[in-house]
Amino acid sequence: MVTGALPVAWAVRALVAAGLACLVLSALVGWRSALVNVTLGADAGHVYNLGLKATWWSWVPYASAFGTLPSVVTLAGPAPAWAPLWMTGADAALGIGAHLLNTLITPTTAAGSPTATSPR
Image 1: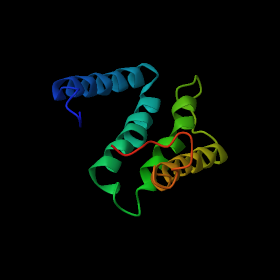
Image 2: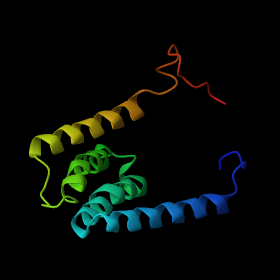
Image 3: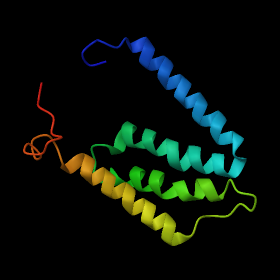
């Protein structure tokens, strides 16, 4: 989209399709799991993009989205229950770590790494 190679209409269609797929697939596994997935998981990305991205609180949506994933699975089972706290905490920590890696390692800081991208 930045270079103009992808028409904006295609991106909008992809966004709508992904949003509908998220809602439908979430609903198919049960209402409890769907509620957690849509509100604490998927909506965390929207909160991040709509305001928290440039703040010191930008790690919170990552912790929320990653941390709720185990409960999305356990709430979809035959005996719906929240995932154990240790599992939720471990996944939240993984999300925070992923966020820190995304924000702290840039092409400038990783210039010597084989995966660093060159500025255009």
